[in-house]
Image (cartoon, rainbow, N blue to C red; front, side):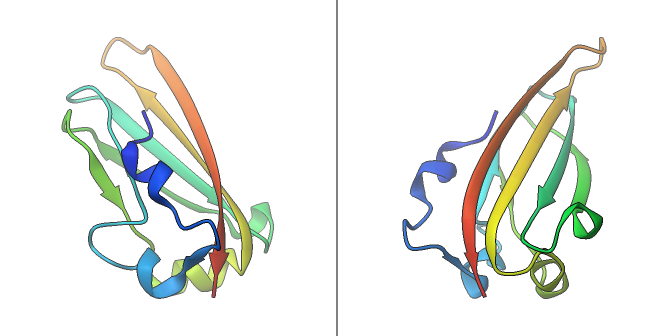
Length: 102
């Protein structure tokens, strides 16, 4: 479910300007009309997690972060958990970690 962009993350970390670009720091793809829920947890702990949900289009969709979300997550290791739930209620999850360089 996490798209090909995951493999393209820089090994030295993802700089905050890159994480804010419209192309996103990674992509997610779910089956059409499924709900995708994202939760990012960073160095500032679970209390400062960034969450969002959207309806999948069946094609890769970029995930980017706002400046406020980057501040909330903090510098360091970030875990992104993605869960897809289809219209029948079936779910599937994936996760990825990356280093956010603020």
